[in-house]
Image (tube, rainbow, N blue to C red):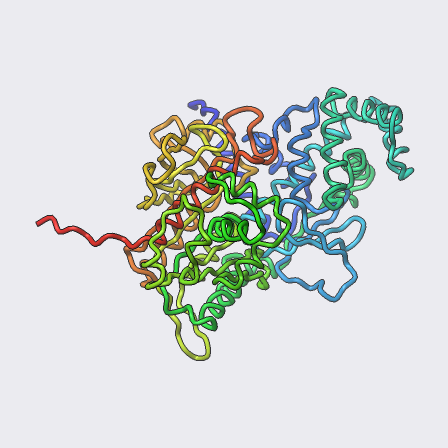
Length: 569
């Protein structure tokens, strides 16, 4: 039999992981250390995601990957042996503690000391994400248990010291802390310095930002302790359950339907439903800062810098609320109430004045005053959720027994993406979206071009891979997409799903076939380079220039009348 290449084995492992996950969701449960869970672990280790670093090395515990996961999972997940995923939120009038992780907008409830329930509102991608993180945690927990167990299955001295310290509830300081970190480094197979850095990240950072985890010492102890308890009794095996309500919800746009209807109702009630509408998928700060930043600084007595990106930095230093400044001038913030976890903004561009805008922004004020297009800014969707929310938003809506149809003129996607062709902070323009693991590929007629942006800035044009999840990035697969005939320049999670919704809306007659589509991404990581995966941490100030350059270009496209077509004859 012909040997498979590394990328082929990795793609097979990714497909296996997805197929098993789909089967387990339909089955209704699985045990992480049972046969199904072991198969998931084998698949995850086979395709060895870049974000999980040294997960496949049995000698050491992966710390950056662990920090990445714990930032996106609820506090206490490391000690649970029962985890439930459900679609229905039955906890509103209970005493169960509600937990939302630091860096992932997902809702969970602590049912007991050993049980957590996730309420799934963002579709299959969220389920895959949770299963992947749980599989990683189980692999690392098993490694910890193996590290601390002697030949006769007795715990080593370092483990006994860690157990006594954690169970005492005392936070060590000075020499005691140094000793605790040294003992922990032996358990982890890491150097003292690596362990110390991870301790600082887990403990000091999170204590300053709301205590989102139980600290590195407590987390490692509970991870190993859970597996030790599993070895003592199969009743303690970690069991993941998928409720019938979750199974029934898959493929049904329950939350997206409510979300889209809320936005359309606001547009109708505000008298904006007859205007041209431009949808922008972006963060919740760039468009409002761009459009109102200069006026906001002026009102607060701050000199407006000549450089746009310096102005954006200055806005951060002003204690006043820019939303409050913008509200009387056509700006509305729509806090999500549908549980989709996607807030929105509605901006009536007819209320925008020249004094609001920075001098570097090109704008046709006569066109804005005459046509008054409406800009609807959507917060980032999560993976396949992007199809659901855009599919529902572009559909006609029934309000007060009347069918409302909206004039959507452009769909603008500004997102973070991993880059394969350049470096963090560079910009990528999609010419197509390649859906990883499926035969679905979408050509993009992108209305954004390199010459729209600041001259000399590093910008790449080409296909973008839409991956199943950030935790499923494999170096060999990505290198294959980049170096083969695909010539992919980057990877992300939502673009292909957005394009699928746009294509469906055109086919069904919900939007015109000539609707403008604009896709631009700024590089948040480079998974082909060691140490530059998403687990390496946030971009920091390096993200300001590409984020606001893209936002500026998108607004200028919206705020300028398209020239009439020239007849060749």
